[in-house]
Amino acid sequence: MQGKIIKGIAGFYYVHVAESGIYECKAKGIFRKENKKPLVGDNVEIDVLDEKDMEGNLVRILPRENELIRPAVANVDQALVVFAAAKPDPHLNLLDRFLVMMERKDIPAVLCFNKKDIADDPRLADLKDIYRNCGCRILFTSAEKKENIRQLREILEGKTTTVAGPSGVGKTSLINLLQSEIKMATGSISEKIERGRHTTRHSELIAIDENSYIMDTPGFSSLYTNDFEKEELKHCFPEFFPYEGQCRYNGCDHVHEPDCAVKAAVESGEIHRARYDSYLDCLLYTSPSPRDCS
Image 1 (cartoon, one colour):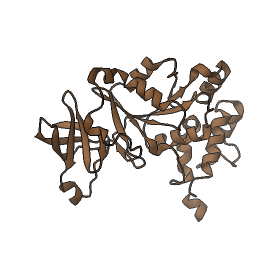
Image 2 (cartoon, one colour):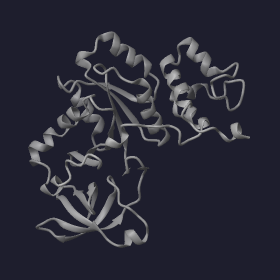
Image 3 (cartoon, rainbow, N blue to C red):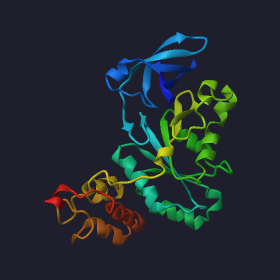
Image 4 (cartoon, rainbow, N blue to C red):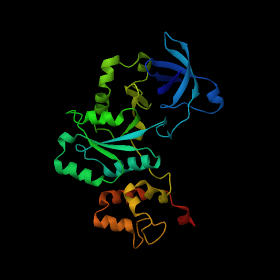
C-alpha cells in the first residue's frame, strides 16, 4: 500500500493513503542500517499490521523529486510565499531571500500578498510592478474577506505546496480557509496526530483534498544566503536572464563592472530598482567565489 508521510514525531510516521485514511507507522530497521531518514512529504510503501487501528510498518521510501534541509521536507511541487500587502508592510529583502531559496532549489514559487482589503490601490500596483518579471505567479488575497481563495485553491490543486512567510501575514487564516471544506467532510484531524499538533517545530502536511497538500513550515522564519557563492546569486534573479551574455565582461557580477547590461536595464526601468537593491543586499551574505580568493 502506498501513501504520503504527512507528519513524523517521536518515532512514528503518519501516512495518508487516499480513500483509506491515516496510518500510524514505525520505520523498519533497514532505514537505520542504510542511514535513511523518512521525511514529511515522502511517498512511501507500508505494510498494514492492524487495519482496525490503522497501524503499520513503513517499508520503502519511493524516489524523491527534491529535498529541503531546513525544514526537512521532501517532494515539494511548489512554494506559496505569503506576505502581507499591509500591516505589516512587506519586508522586500526577506521576501526576495525566500524567492532566491526557491529559485536555487528549482522549486516554482507562487507569491501571495494577503490583506489586500486593507492596502490601498497604489500600494498593490507598486507590488505588482516590483515583481512583474520575478518568474512567479502573483496573487492578491484577503483571508478576512475571503477574496481570491478559490483562485488560490486552483493553484494548489493536485500539488504538494510548502507555505512560507513571516508571522503576522495571515498564513494561518489562509490555511484554515483552504482546509475548511475537507474538515467539514471528514471531521477533525485524526486523533493519532493530535499528540503532536502543538509541537510547532515539526513540519506537517495538511490535506486540502485527496491529492492536494499544504505544508506550514515554521523553519522558514529566517533565511540566509551565505551557503553559496556570490556567482550563483545572479542566476536566482529571473529578471537578469534576458541580459545574459550582453555585458562587456564574461562572468559580470552586475555591480561595479562598466557596460553592464543588467545595470543599464535597472536605469531604464526594465528591471525594478527594488529587486536590484535586494540583489546587492543578498550579495553581502554570500561566500566569496574562488576567483576572489585567488
